[in-house]
Image (tube, rainbow, N blue to C red; front, side):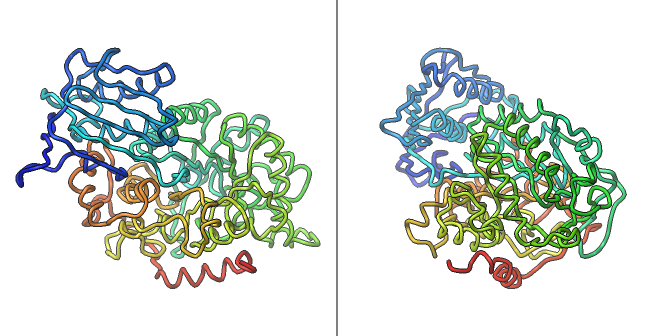
Length: 547
């Protein structure tokens, strides 16, 4: 595996691998020649970068046959005075490689770029040839456009085994993404052990079947589905992600989306429910009762969540809260209970030194939302705009730009096509900061987050298809900022898809799905973008007043 030498002259010379990096670096200066390691080439580093050096050896050693022991050749350094925290400077000469980062996270980001300077086979888990390998001479300077570069992974609708979550973490690291938002609970399943509440996993973690295709068609299978993570499993995921400079943000959806909870513990619910939910979409009767027992449950759950996840933020959902169940139980003011619950949950988290993350519906609670809450703006750009103008920090995750359950093309063979069209180009055009915001308001947007809702993704293969290569486009949008889509597509097709192949990612081909990726047995429900945008205007009327 030897790369072609780059050259600044000569019409027949091949482009330097330095220009095929994805996400796109801020500054690239290709040079002439290559750095070719020998059997004695090693890695030198200060003690603070021991973990990053260990990752480099583990990632490149098996694929390249170069063990990279301790010694000269590749030097890793910290340079916080000259570089931003996640920024890096990578210099490859004919005799050495030097990588400087503003922090360990910056060095790790630079290592992802260094790996991409090698042929795609460097992403395999073992050698597939006997040729040597080399790095092109170049200088690359880079830093992220946004601090929050997240992906929400829904493991509640369809459970994803631990080893597949760890694999997804590795794929995030390749693309320099740094927040994994883990959606652990919903009406259709509860995925986390909580001491003292054993029926959450013995009852709430599985359902008798699932809908097949979009909910409008009322088609079901009869396959039981379930699974959950032990505390040790989740601690492993958190530590594995932290080693790759990825923060895991947990989500426990409250006070609605709790039909699995009420199925396990009926006394916690406002009204009875019929088991763990097997349907997708719509509003369920699974809502917590406004009682001390329900608050005690929330307190116990959040205590366990905070014990496992060191994240500054804990997401409590707060979205899609129906008032009907509270009306039927005779509460005198059901419209106030959503905000009442959010305020209680925020105080529980604050007592443990954490901050509440809520979806943009919580803004309707007004003063109930603490000033330090983080808002997930998901209903188009409206949630992001309303949150930023109200003075909240916000993560932009507009469904019309970054919901990866939405269909990828107009093709009839697209598997389970739901929602408005969201193409690769649409995702690449995502801008976390809406143009309607002032500079002061825009500064409150921490970044962006792609959303992988898994109602129609029942396996890691299906997640691969729906996420990639759209996640590549998203990663560039939040790391690099605005770019040229044609140039991005050239890098994607000429170099990056081969890396995904080597990693075993079953992505969607740009020309459309392979025959085995289609789902003729499951019917979708495509929508037009104008229809969805009109709906969003109506849904967000309560949070857009006065902003």
